[in-house]
Amino acid sequence: KVIAVTVFMLSVCFLWAQIPDNWYESKPIASIVFQGLKSVSKTEMDGIFDSFKGKPFSDATYSEILQKLYALDYFSDIVPKAIPADIDYQYVRLEFDVTEKPVVALIKITGNNRISRSDLLSKIVLKKGDIYNEIKKNTDEQTLKNYYIEKGYASAVVNASISDSPQGGIVLEFTITEGKQTIVSEVSFQGNAIVGAKALKGALVTKPAKFLVKGIFQERALEEDKAAIQRFYGERGYIDAHVETIVRDIDSESDPQRNMIKLTYIIMEG
Image (cartoon, rainbow, N blue to C red):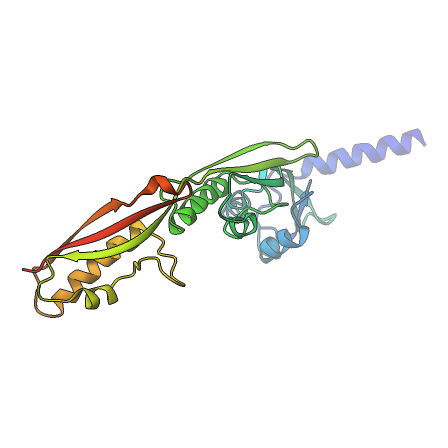
């Protein structure tokens, strides 16, 4: 028995010695397997990489697979292997031992007194249970900042941070300093000798606060309004018309949550 086992082992070693290092070149890919998946779905990975099955293995194909893997940004470490899929070494099985990045275990939002948590959560890309991604975190931080600006909180500050969760994964926290909401209480015009104020107000995006109109001030809308007034004059032959704006606070200290302003459009009709 000892002799038989020895002969068998020597035969196996001889066969392995006859296999060239690059035996997998041009061999069809029989399967692609990922070891170490925990939070990432096998179904998702199969859906992305099944299209490579049956293709002949090459440096170009391997590079394309790796690019797709790294583009997912799910893993902190990837170790590839090429394994024979049959005893004749006619097919190759690709295995990737992966180490997943941490999962978002909890999302915290603090400081949001005027906008609801559910509203803010609906705006961000990262969700509870997602693989953490630094780029997405930074994008979500800016998204919430922009959302506050759209709601009239021009001085809002949003900071995103992460910490380890005791239950595993990480805690993603958005800390918000809202500041005051800026409300337009009045809109007026100066220099409009040719066109009446009522006609000009109809061309504006910005509307003063009144019943059923919130009057939220947006810097972006102010620029759109200036362009709209110039276009309004240009369509009537006043191509040299120019518009400037003056923003004045109106008793802002009386309301701790809102900053009331008056907008004045200075028009040089030309």
